[in-house]
Length: 629
Image 1: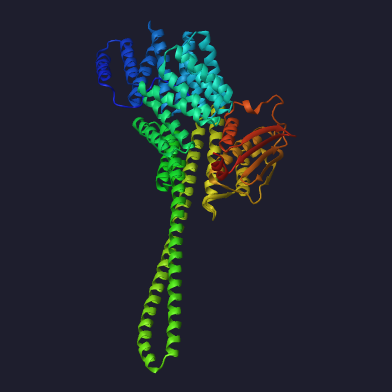
Image 2 (image 1 turned 120 degrees about the vertical axis):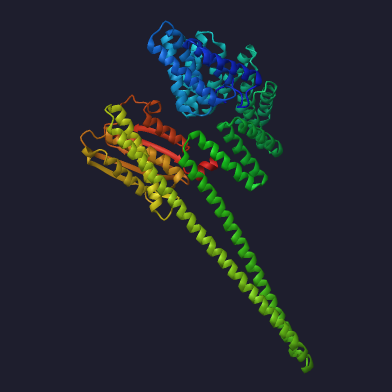
C-alpha cells in the first residue's frame, strides 16, 4: 500500500462515537459564531472519517464554504479560518484519495499547500507532499511521485516530523519497488519499520512488514515473503485494522498461490474480498477478484474464474471512471467466452451424433450381410424362416435410418441457430462501436462549443488538444464499425485518415507531405486506442512546431519487429526539439501522455533529433501483454 493513513474499513459508527457526533450536531445548530461552528464540524468529520466517507466529505465541504466566506470578510479571526481551511483541504484530499478520486485529491492537497505556505506552517506541509506523491504513483507518474516523496522526506527531517518521515520513507520504498530497484526498496522499508517501532506505531509496522514481504516476493523468495505477510496479518488482526487486513490477506493469497497451496490461497482471497466488500473499496475489490480468478482457474473451476474476472474488470474500471470502456470490455469478454463455450458444445454434440449414426449404419449393414449369407447357405425352409427375420430387421434398419436423419436435422438446426446468434452478436458489437463513436462525436462537439466562449489562448489550446484526442478515439470506433472485421483495425488506413484529420486543423500548412508505411498490419482495439492517442499527440505537435513555413515532410511507419512486438516511428524534417531537451522529464500533458500510454502498452517512447524530431514507440499487442503479465 502506497500511503498508510489511520482509516479503517467503512463500517457502522460505534455507539460512543455516534453519541459524540450527535452532541456536536447540536453545537453546530446552536452556534452563534462561525468559529465555534467550524470547530464542531471539524471534530465531527474527524470522528466519522474512518467509517462514513460520504458524510465526511459533506462535512468537509461545509467547513470549506464557511472558511472561504469568513476569509473574504477579512475579520479578526482570519488566521484561524485560513488554518482551518488548510487542514480541511488536506483532510478532504485524503478522503478523495481513499475512494480513488485522484484528480480531486490532488486539487485539495495543492490548495492545502498554498494555505500552509501563506501561514508559514512547514510542519504539516510534509504530509501534503506525501499524499501528492501517493496520488502521482497511482496515476503511474513515478518520477513526479519520487520528487514529492523526497520533498516530504527533507521537510520532515528539517521539522523533526518523525511520523511523516516514516510515511515518506515508506512511499519512497514503493516507488523504488515499482522501478525494480529492490535493494533500495528493501532499505527504505527497513528504515520505515524501525521508525514505526520507535514510535510504537503498530499500524505502521503492519504496513512495513507487508511491503518487505512484497520485496521478497518480487525477488522470488516466497518462503521469506510468507513470514513477513504473516507478521503483518498478526499485527493488523490485533489492532482490528480492517482496511489493512484487505491487503495482508490478498498478499498471503498471492504467495500461497505461487506455492501451489490452493486451499490457503482461496481462503485468504475470500477474506480479502469480504473485507473489501464491507468497505466498498475499489482497489481491494480489484485485487481480491483478480486473485480469486487465478485460484479458481488453477482449480479448474472455469465458471467461478469467469465470474471473479468479471468482478475484477468492474472494480478496475470503476477506479478509472470510464463507463463506456468498462461496458465494451465486459461485453467483449462475455461474448468471447460464451461463443467459445457454445462452439465447443455444438461441435461435441455434432461429433458424437455423427459417430453414433455411422456405427449404427455399419452395424446394420454387417448384420444384413450376415443374414444374406445364411439365407443362401440354408435351404428353402430356412429361407422362409429367415425371410420373416429379414423383414423385421428391415423395419429396424428403417427406424434407425429415420433416427439418424432426425439427428442430422437437429445438428443442422443447431448449426443454423449458432450462425444466426453469431451474426446477431456481430451486429450488436458493431452497434456498440457505432454508439461509442457517436458519443465521442457529441463530446467533441461540446468541446467545440465550449471553445467558442474562451478568450484565454492557453485554455483554448487545452480544449482543442482534448478535442483532438476524442476525435482520434472516435475514428477508431468508426473504422471498426465500417469494417467487416469488427475487432481488428487496419492501421495503415487509420493513420492515413488521422493524418488528414490533423492536417485539417492547420489550414496554413497544406504544403506538408504525408508518408505512411504500415502495410498489412492489423491491431486489436485494446492496442489501437492507446496507440491512436499517442499518434494524435505526436502528429499535433509536429504540425504545431515542425513546419514554421507551412511545408515539409511528416512520416509514420509501423513495423512488427518480432511476433507480437512492434515499433512505431513518427518523424519530421523540422528543426527538432532544443539540444538540451530531456524527453523523459518533459512536463507537458501531451508528452506525459505519450510516455504513460507507452508504458501501458508494455513498451517505451524514445526521442532523438535525426534531421528533425524522431519518436520511436515500441509496444506489445494484447495477446503478448497478457502472456507477459
